Length: 239
Image (tube, rainbow, N blue to C red; front, side):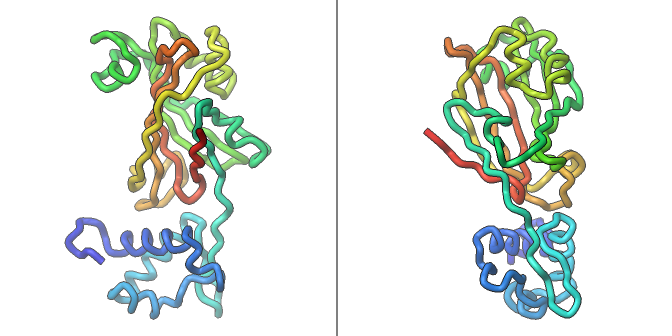
Protein backbone atom coordinates (compact mmCIF):
# COMPACT_ATOMS: atom_id res chain seq x y z
CA UNK A 1 0.00 0.00 0.00
CA UNK A 2 1.13 3.54 -0.73
CA UNK A 3 1.03 5.37 2.60
CA UNK A 4 2.13 8.70 1.08
CA UNK A 5 -0.25 8.54 -1.87
CA UNK A 6 -2.77 10.98 -0.40
CA UNK A 7 -5.56 8.37 -0.50
CA UNK A 8 -6.68 6.83 2.80
CA UNK A 9 -5.37 3.30 3.37
CA UNK A 10 -8.86 1.89 3.91
CA UNK A 11 -9.91 3.29 0.54
CA UNK A 12 -6.89 1.78 -1.21
CA UNK A 13 -7.67 -1.57 0.40
CA UNK A 14 -11.36 -1.41 -0.55
CA UNK A 15 -10.29 -0.69 -4.14
CA UNK A 16 -8.00 -3.73 -4.14
CA UNK A 17 -10.63 -6.03 -2.64
CA UNK A 18 -13.21 -4.72 -5.11
CA UNK A 19 -10.83 -5.41 -8.01
CA UNK A 20 -10.16 -8.91 -6.70
CA UNK A 21 -13.90 -9.61 -6.49
CA UNK A 22 -14.44 -8.35 -10.04
CA UNK A 23 -11.56 -10.54 -11.24
CA UNK A 24 -13.20 -13.58 -9.65
CA UNK A 25 -10.32 -14.16 -7.27
CA UNK A 26 -12.62 -15.27 -4.46
CA UNK A 27 -15.19 -17.17 -6.55
CA UNK A 28 -14.12 -20.51 -5.15
CA UNK A 29 -15.40 -19.70 -1.67
CA UNK A 30 -17.81 -16.82 -2.25
CA UNK A 31 -16.15 -15.21 0.77
CA UNK A 32 -13.64 -12.43 1.28
CA UNK A 33 -10.58 -13.65 3.23
CA UNK A 34 -10.67 -13.22 6.98
CA UNK A 35 -9.79 -9.82 8.46
CA UNK A 36 -6.57 -11.18 9.95
CA UNK A 37 -5.49 -12.54 6.55
CA UNK A 38 -6.31 -9.24 4.81
CA UNK A 39 -4.50 -7.24 7.50
CA UNK A 40 -1.40 -9.37 6.98
CA UNK A 41 -1.70 -9.18 3.17
CA UNK A 42 -1.92 -5.38 3.13
CA UNK A 43 0.36 -4.71 6.09
CA UNK A 44 -2.25 -2.80 8.13
CA UNK A 45 -4.22 -3.33 11.32
CA UNK A 46 -7.64 -4.96 11.46
CA UNK A 47 -9.40 -1.64 12.11
CA UNK A 48 -8.26 -0.40 8.69
CA UNK A 49 -9.47 -3.61 7.06
CA UNK A 50 -12.83 -3.27 8.81
CA UNK A 51 -13.22 0.28 7.47
CA UNK A 52 -12.55 -0.99 3.96
CA UNK A 53 -15.05 -3.83 4.31
CA UNK A 54 -17.65 -1.48 5.81
CA UNK A 55 -17.38 0.76 2.73
CA UNK A 56 -17.86 -2.23 0.44
CA UNK A 57 -20.84 -3.36 2.50
CA UNK A 58 -22.48 0.06 2.06
CA UNK A 59 -22.05 -0.37 -1.70
CA UNK A 60 -23.82 -3.73 -1.52
CA UNK A 61 -20.76 -5.67 -2.63
CA UNK A 62 -20.26 -7.67 0.58
CA UNK A 63 -22.09 -8.34 3.83
CA UNK A 64 -21.03 -9.61 7.21
CA UNK A 65 -22.41 -13.08 8.04
CA UNK A 66 -22.27 -13.86 11.76
CA UNK A 67 -20.09 -16.85 12.45
CA UNK A 68 -18.95 -17.11 8.81
CA UNK A 69 -17.09 -13.95 7.86
CA UNK A 70 -17.64 -11.59 4.93
CA UNK A 71 -19.83 -12.87 2.10
CA UNK A 72 -19.66 -11.51 -1.45
CA UNK A 73 -23.15 -10.30 -2.38
CA UNK A 74 -22.48 -8.19 -5.45
CA UNK A 75 -25.31 -8.30 -7.94
CA UNK A 76 -24.75 -9.01 -11.62
CA UNK A 77 -23.59 -6.09 -13.70
CA UNK A 78 -25.49 -4.53 -16.55
CA UNK A 79 -23.61 -4.99 -19.80
CA UNK A 80 -23.64 -1.73 -21.77
CA UNK A 81 -22.50 -2.00 -25.41
CA UNK A 82 -20.64 0.86 -27.05
CA UNK A 83 -20.62 0.83 -30.83
CA UNK A 84 -21.59 2.69 -33.97
CA UNK A 85 -25.13 3.21 -32.67
CA UNK A 86 -25.03 3.52 -28.89
CA UNK A 87 -28.42 3.80 -27.16
CA UNK A 88 -29.11 3.45 -23.45
CA UNK A 89 -32.50 1.75 -23.76
CA UNK A 90 -31.47 -0.62 -26.53
CA UNK A 91 -28.13 -1.27 -24.85
CA UNK A 92 -29.60 -2.36 -21.54
CA UNK A 93 -32.43 -4.03 -23.44
CA UNK A 94 -33.84 -7.16 -21.81
CA UNK A 95 -31.44 -6.94 -18.87
CA UNK A 96 -33.99 -4.75 -17.04
CA UNK A 97 -37.76 -4.54 -16.98
CA UNK A 98 -38.06 -0.84 -16.15
CA UNK A 99 -35.82 1.81 -17.75
CA UNK A 100 -36.19 5.44 -16.85
CA UNK A 101 -34.41 8.72 -17.69
CA UNK A 102 -34.84 11.57 -15.21
CA UNK A 103 -34.01 15.22 -15.88
CA UNK A 104 -32.33 16.82 -12.87
CA UNK A 105 -31.68 20.29 -14.29
CA UNK A 106 -31.19 22.17 -17.54
CA UNK A 107 -29.96 25.54 -18.76
CA UNK A 108 -29.03 27.42 -21.89
CA UNK A 109 -25.49 28.76 -21.68
CA UNK A 110 -22.47 29.84 -23.67
CA UNK A 111 -20.42 26.81 -24.67
CA UNK A 112 -17.04 26.39 -23.01
CA UNK A 113 -13.95 26.00 -25.18
CA UNK A 114 -14.04 22.22 -24.79
CA UNK A 115 -17.76 21.91 -25.54
CA UNK A 116 -17.42 24.21 -28.55
CA UNK A 117 -14.60 22.07 -29.92
CA UNK A 118 -16.52 18.83 -29.37
CA UNK A 119 -19.64 20.16 -31.10
CA UNK A 120 -17.69 22.16 -33.71
CA UNK A 121 -19.37 25.41 -32.71
CA UNK A 122 -18.15 28.96 -33.14
CA UNK A 123 -16.79 30.81 -30.11
CA UNK A 124 -19.64 32.27 -28.08
CA UNK A 125 -22.25 29.86 -29.42
CA UNK A 126 -25.01 28.79 -27.06
CA UNK A 127 -25.79 25.24 -26.00
CA UNK A 128 -28.55 23.55 -24.05
CA UNK A 129 -27.12 21.69 -21.05
CA UNK A 130 -29.02 18.79 -19.50
CA UNK A 131 -28.14 17.02 -16.26
CA UNK A 132 -29.86 13.71 -15.73
CA UNK A 133 -29.72 10.21 -14.35
CA UNK A 134 -30.87 6.91 -15.80
CA UNK A 135 -32.28 4.05 -13.77
CA UNK A 136 -32.73 0.37 -14.55
CA UNK A 137 -35.16 -1.52 -12.32
CA UNK A 138 -34.89 1.27 -9.78
CA UNK A 139 -31.07 1.25 -9.68
CA UNK A 140 -29.27 4.41 -10.74
CA UNK A 141 -26.85 3.26 -13.44
CA UNK A 142 -25.60 6.53 -14.90
CA UNK A 143 -25.34 10.26 -14.31
CA UNK A 144 -24.87 12.48 -17.35
CA UNK A 145 -24.21 16.05 -18.32
CA UNK A 146 -25.14 16.59 -21.97
CA UNK A 147 -24.78 19.53 -24.31
CA UNK A 148 -26.69 20.20 -27.55
CA UNK A 149 -26.36 23.12 -30.03
CA UNK A 150 -29.05 25.55 -28.86
CA UNK A 151 -29.74 26.87 -32.36
CA UNK A 152 -30.92 23.42 -33.42
CA UNK A 153 -32.20 21.88 -30.19
CA UNK A 154 -33.79 24.63 -28.10
CA UNK A 155 -36.40 22.88 -25.98
CA UNK A 156 -34.78 19.45 -25.94
CA UNK A 157 -34.76 19.59 -22.15
CA UNK A 158 -38.57 19.60 -22.18
CA UNK A 159 -38.63 16.74 -24.70
CA UNK A 160 -36.28 14.65 -22.54
CA UNK A 161 -38.27 15.38 -19.39
CA UNK A 162 -41.45 14.21 -21.13
CA UNK A 163 -40.04 11.12 -22.86
CA UNK A 164 -37.27 10.02 -20.49
CA UNK A 165 -35.18 9.17 -23.56
CA UNK A 166 -32.55 11.11 -25.50
CA UNK A 167 -33.31 9.08 -28.63
CA UNK A 168 -37.00 9.98 -28.48
CA UNK A 169 -36.20 13.58 -27.57
CA UNK A 170 -33.94 13.91 -30.62
CA UNK A 171 -36.68 12.50 -32.84
CA UNK A 172 -38.86 15.46 -31.84
CA UNK A 173 -36.30 17.62 -33.66
CA UNK A 174 -36.24 15.43 -36.75
CA UNK A 175 -33.20 13.35 -35.80
CA UNK A 176 -34.49 9.82 -36.22
CA UNK A 177 -31.05 8.18 -36.35
CA UNK A 178 -27.60 9.16 -35.16
CA UNK A 179 -24.11 7.70 -34.87
CA UNK A 180 -21.45 7.51 -32.18
CA UNK A 181 -18.42 9.43 -33.44
CA UNK A 182 -16.16 9.17 -30.38
CA UNK A 183 -16.09 7.53 -26.96
CA UNK A 184 -13.34 8.17 -24.39
CA UNK A 185 -13.35 6.03 -21.23
CA UNK A 186 -11.60 6.59 -17.91
CA UNK A 187 -12.04 5.51 -14.28
CA UNK A 188 -12.01 7.76 -11.22
CA UNK A 189 -13.14 7.83 -7.61
CA UNK A 190 -16.72 8.95 -7.07
CA UNK A 191 -17.28 12.65 -6.48
CA UNK A 192 -19.87 13.94 -3.99
CA UNK A 193 -22.52 14.31 -6.71
CA UNK A 194 -21.85 10.72 -7.82
CA UNK A 195 -22.28 9.49 -4.26
CA UNK A 196 -25.62 11.27 -3.95
CA UNK A 197 -27.10 10.56 -7.40
CA UNK A 198 -25.76 7.04 -7.93
CA UNK A 199 -26.23 5.98 -4.30
CA UNK A 200 -22.56 5.15 -3.76
CA UNK A 201 -20.19 5.39 -0.85
CA UNK A 202 -17.21 7.78 -0.81
CA UNK A 203 -14.28 6.18 -2.58
CA UNK A 204 -16.35 4.05 -4.96
CA UNK A 205 -15.06 3.77 -8.52
CA UNK A 206 -17.00 5.25 -11.44
CA UNK A 207 -16.40 4.72 -15.15
CA UNK A 208 -16.50 7.98 -17.09
CA UNK A 209 -17.32 8.25 -20.79
CA UNK A 210 -16.92 11.35 -22.92
CA UNK A 211 -18.90 10.83 -26.07
CA UNK A 212 -19.88 12.71 -29.22
CA UNK A 213 -22.88 11.73 -31.34
CA UNK A 214 -23.47 13.02 -34.87
CA UNK A 215 -26.38 12.99 -37.28
CA UNK A 216 -26.12 10.92 -40.43
CA UNK A 217 -24.48 13.84 -42.22
CA UNK A 218 -21.66 13.90 -39.68
CA UNK A 219 -22.72 17.05 -37.82
CA UNK A 220 -22.24 16.82 -34.03
CA UNK A 221 -25.54 16.92 -32.20
CA UNK A 222 -24.58 15.90 -28.66
CA UNK A 223 -21.58 15.87 -26.37
CA UNK A 224 -22.05 13.96 -23.12
CA UNK A 225 -19.99 13.19 -20.04
CA UNK A 226 -21.52 10.17 -18.33
CA UNK A 227 -20.53 8.48 -15.10
CA UNK A 228 -21.38 4.83 -14.39
CA UNK A 229 -20.88 2.94 -11.09
CA UNK A 230 -18.15 0.43 -11.91
CA UNK A 231 -19.69 -2.19 -9.64
CA UNK A 232 -22.99 -2.12 -11.53
CA UNK A 233 -22.04 -1.56 -15.17
CA UNK A 234 -19.48 -2.99 -17.58
CA UNK A 235 -18.80 -1.92 -21.16
CA UNK A 236 -18.64 -4.07 -24.27
CA UNK A 237 -16.94 -2.36 -27.21
CA UNK A 238 -18.44 -3.37 -30.53
CA UNK A 239 -17.32 -2.52 -34.06
